[in-house]
Picture 1 (cartoon, one colour):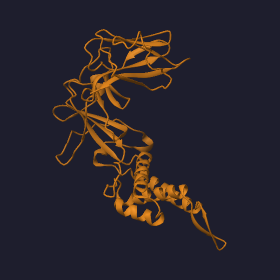
Picture 2 (cartoon, one colour):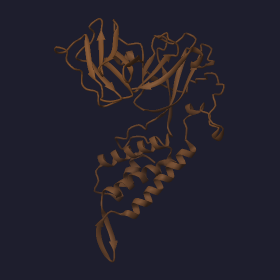
Picture 3 (cartoon, one colour):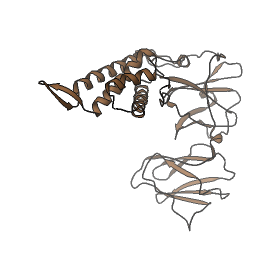
Picture 4 (cartoon, one colour):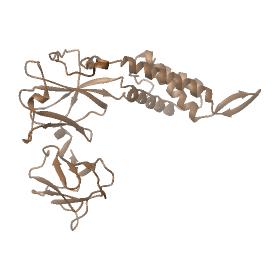
Amino acid sequence: MTTLRLFEQVKKVFPGLGETEILQEIDNVQKELTEESKALAARGQLVDISTNTAWVLPAEFLELFDVVAYDSNSNPVFLSSYNLAHEIEFGNFHLYSLTETPITGINSGITSIYLEYYKKSATVNSLTSVLEFKDVFHAGVRAGVLRNFYSLYPVDIAINDKIIRAKDVTSIKVFDKEYERVIKRLKRSRYPDATHAQAQNYQFAGKFELPRRTDALGTAQTFQSINALSTIYSKYASWELTYPIGVTASITPVGFTGTISAVITNNRLYLVSTENEFANTMDWDANQEDIQTPIPVGGFSNTTWIFDLPLGDWGTIKFVIFQRI
């Protein structure tokens, strides 16, 4: 079923709705189906791994389910063999050392790294947009769209030989049931892409780390290139803060010439640049909302930034400063 065909089917039931509203709802429902079922998967390759330790995840990224690495002979290797681990923070993928020695790039024994992940569906914004699910699952998108419109708009209903304007509860229930049926089918089938094939599921036996196959990349396969932080950000540094005074650098700072130090005193985070590299074009982010905007130190300072931390025991905070290119 094409987007045009789906649009026409909805338009017959709700002729008063415009093209923009219907397309927006088709897009919303397809994304909802994707996120609930995790039915779409993709594989992305980390670029420039010898000189980077962090990469910006693609906009389509939904959830990581595997990381695979290979040596120069296309044989599989494990990150743990090189004392490496990974984490996702603020939409970025980080590799870090399990030893006390920080890293600025990946060991030469690893020549390629791929992320295998569930992805979001592509945006539907025109009648020619392609629906990403197979035709057999398009009924779920249609059911979700009609369910939502029946929930939102009253229609003419015949009751006791009279026509009244009301919400059609029966239709809402029918289409919601159809939508849930498709969700269950998607979850059972997982409808995986070819790139999803390395994930092993032994159900009740659990998930095992099995010997991996060699890297058999064919010319017919295309992969999303996952760019390094340095291609998106001119400056980037992050820390993990632990109540009351713990500060640990998450990655080696990117784009800074000098040292960026961080310390917590009297429930305030102090960031200091030894080379006066802070700029008023830089921004910051954290995974808690109660952190206050930097406190001016005699006006804007390119040397020191001070942040008020939340009151009480705030646990653990991920904190980042950055400047986009």
